[in-house]
Image (cartoon, rainbow, N blue to C red; front, side, top):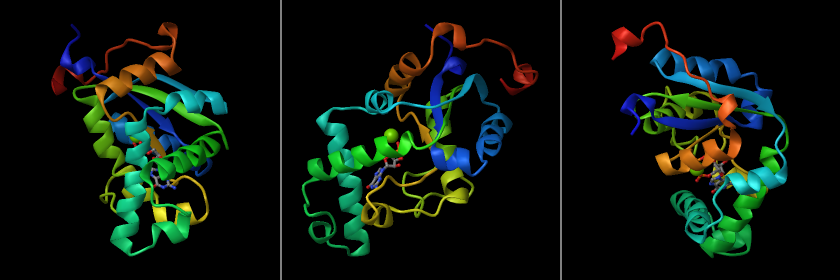
Length: 196
Ligand code: GDP
Ligand code: MG
């Protein structure tokens, strides 16, 4: 069994993050916290890769739809009028399709980040999916201003700078999917003896 400080997660800088020149800023936020980047690459994804990266099960797709429904309810928008349906599975499928289109629109930067509770820590540093509720001081809270209501009207995914694995299981799937063993590196950071 690996040590708790070896937990790993995947971060992908999305097209808006790359095109806005935020790659360095994003990596720097992880590094200064004490988390370790152990794999890193810029690449152009294919639609098939993105389709296989995001979960395909109904529960995940419905959850995507639910996010839109909750957001519309909160701001008083009519889901049926805006999207032609209030079925969360149909909406989830729509959003998933826009997400695939978006993720191939420019190069991405993929990385593996390692550290204690890396999954939760990186999610916290990244901030909430919806930039409107992402805390200040998070990547999404500091650099994005998009929202589901606007993104859905324009039939596109929310531009929220980064992707980050949500659970250790999701991270495991994403590491195996995006990286070969030879691309993952092992080294000791200078402060490790002092940090833990
Ligand atoms: P994440 O893990 O925080 O990235 O969020 P999810 O896994 O739920 O969704 C994946 C991505 O789909 C998000 O980061 C957004 O780019 C996009 N997305 C999620 N919900 C919505 C939505 O309601 N509308 C639109 N247009 N895009 C969404
Ligand atoms: Mg997610």
